[in-house]
Image (tube, rainbow, N blue to C red; front, side, top):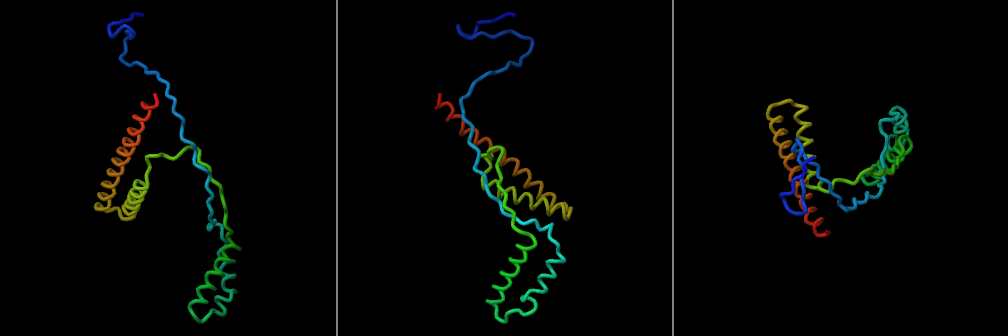
Length: 166
């Protein structure tokens, strides 16, 4: 294989039939640690036996002998419904562990914008109108641009810090 040393005394380039050359490098960057596990509490409402729930609700004193004033009525309502929910669909606690760190460029602003985008998408899916499609499409394009700019801004901020470590 021919080598050409016309660039400088230390550099040499191999002449190959392709213009695609691999670039090899080693970076000593430690990955960000995973976030700590979080505890999520929820109820599996789709497993509830609605018939037995309604039977228990009808037999409660909230229906048979409700309080006359608003304060005790609200207190009884909250207490009885909470105890019935705990009986029929207890709270499930789950510990979730992330397999990968979250994207640091995914900011709260982007999360709010994505929520607006999903809302517009659901409206368009429900109505199938041209105006809703146009609104959704415009928000979708803005969201895509926001993703690109957020990633560019985040990764550009990392590049100078890498060179300062060398």
